[in-house]
Length: 81
Image 1: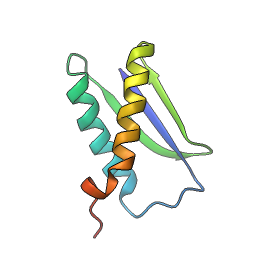
Image 2: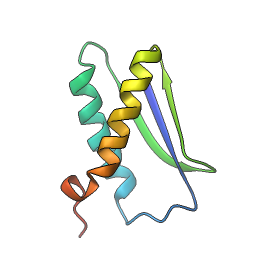
Image 3: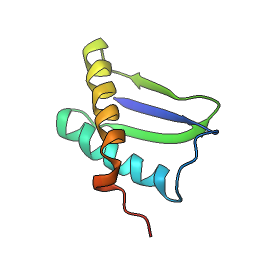
């Protein structure tokens, strides 16, 4: 399964946030979908978007929840500095 997350260029994120989000999201997705090799990419683009290739509606719904949980818990896993 391939997961692509785009973050709007207008979103102000601290240095290293994209790489940290990629790592944390990969860890969480692989925990829920260990049976497949999952590829996660996060990058800046024109708008916020989530694309899940190779997964059904249930997988996309669960990944949407994981992304939301990851974003909301950034204070727990994103360390600046």
